[in-house]
Amino acid sequence: MKKFLSVILSLLMVIAAASTLPFAASALEPSGSCGENVTYSFNTETGELTICGSGEMYDYEWSSSPFQNNSNIISVTVNSGVTDVSNYAFYNCTGLTSIKLPESVKAIGKGAFYNCTSLSNLSLPNGIVSIGVSAFSNTAYYNNEDNWEKYTNDDYEDQEVLYIDNYLIRTKSSFLGSYEIKAGTRIIANSAFSGSKYLTELDIPNSVVIIGDDAFSQCEGLSDISIPNSVISIGKEAFYGCNTFKNVTVPGSVKSIGRAAFINCLGLESVVVSEGVESIGDSAFRHNNLLTNISLPSSLKSIGADAFDNTGYYNDENNWYNGALYLDNYLLNAQKCTAESYTVNDNTQVIAGDAFYGCKSLTSITIPNSVTSIGKSAFDYCSSLTDVYYDGTKEQWSTIKIGDGNSYYLTKSTIHCTDGDIEPHTHSYASTVTAPTCTEQGYTTHTCECGDSYVDTYVDALGHKSDKGTVTKKATYTATGVKTYKCTVCGEVIKTETIAKLPKKANTLVAKGKTATVKFANLKKKNQTVTQKNAFVVSKAQGKVTYKKASGNAKITVSSAGKLTVKKGLKKGTYKIKVKVTAAGNTTYKAVTKTVTVTIKVK
Picture 1: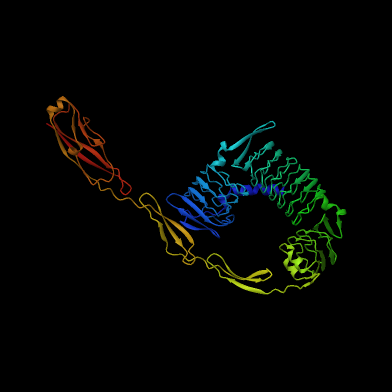
Picture 2: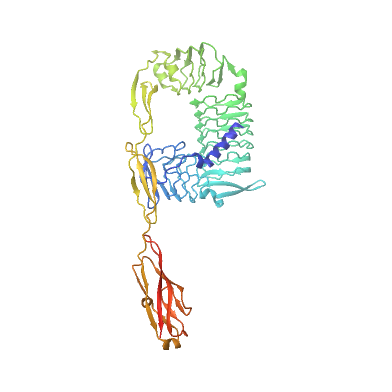
């Protein structure tokens, strides 16, 4: 239940990211850095953003990407050499309509294009191995029902699945019954089927290479599935809480089983990990109380901490001897060991992570030369350990892969090898001072040649010193401008200010009415006209000039172009009409209207 709530809360946090993620400045600098070896350039006129360099972008999970919330970005082109699109990189870029990614991109982070509501066409390169949760959620592509494939299974119609090329992105959480993933699919994205508790059967084609993190978590009704031998990686918590599983076979094509991949599969009874699998992550099969039959291959190079804790095999006291739990040639756990000395079984290949964690009584241990790997923190907090007896040479000891968290307690012990001792290491630290910057505190790092290090002597960050600001975009009569303030020390943009549009100038229109004469004899026969030039004097107008009668005799009319019509039947006399003359203005000048008097004499 805690895990289920955690998944729901994670999804809600992505959906509600607008209120939790910091907003990027509205004005994006024309160029800048977005990775240790990755830069960008932005064309403010066209909205084209180009990212180039090598390696990964910065991870923006806990800080604001320079591109987030920017509606002025229209297209994104990532050049070859860049290897990922990081978490939330283009979050809420509502103007973004197209992206172009190279084959070098291997990962797309969670929320990377979330809420890019104009992004309707998507195509992804073939080499991607990881697609984060909600990477494309609430894009125009995601929201277009035509992109969701309708699938009818059993008695259930219109089950919906979203693909982008050969990547399965997401299913609707209400998915029911069985499903056959499309042939040719390469990746099942992170959380693709997460929470589909009414999914009962699944057919995975022999084209799938990656099963992503949380891909099938909380699929409580999913029965045993066949993992094809095309799969090379099973992500963390991929099958968390699949309670209907009874038997699982992991094919030898899989190189790594992720952290907690099969945790809390409460009905799981049997697991076969086939020859070829090299790594089992922390807690991979933990909390499976019915799991008693476990087969492991000789190809394993590492087993994570608690990988089989609280399984039926773990809980069977008959499987423990002298406080240690083995499975074939693998030492899984020895935390119940209270002896001062311990001898690891002959032919043991791997000592799992956390195996002897906290065994404070242990003063010496004997390790056979068959051991090739000692897991992360296997001897952490073995505070009394002083002697390691190794049944091999110094050179053989140096080839053992020793995980993090072991250096202190192993290096302070004497390693007794068949060709002599490796004496406890005495640390000799070289100090490196990292000066404070405007935003980061300074510190001193002390590093020993063995790799051990510690940090002290922290110095507060200096804080930015702002310049007087530079106009980076001039205001016009139709558009606002931008003033940018940078730090005089590091050059970072501190803030931007909007410059108001320039106020329009007063229109220079000059307008006067004239006196025009109409012959009565002609007027008796038909209507008479007076041209604009004979009725008005207009000069210096800014913008189109139009005319509109304001008052006067009904038999005298005025067109918008300024032509007067005197209608047949008007008697002799002098007539005055008022006319509104309007200059419409333009980008620089305001509109203006002036009222003039035109005199018409009929005689």
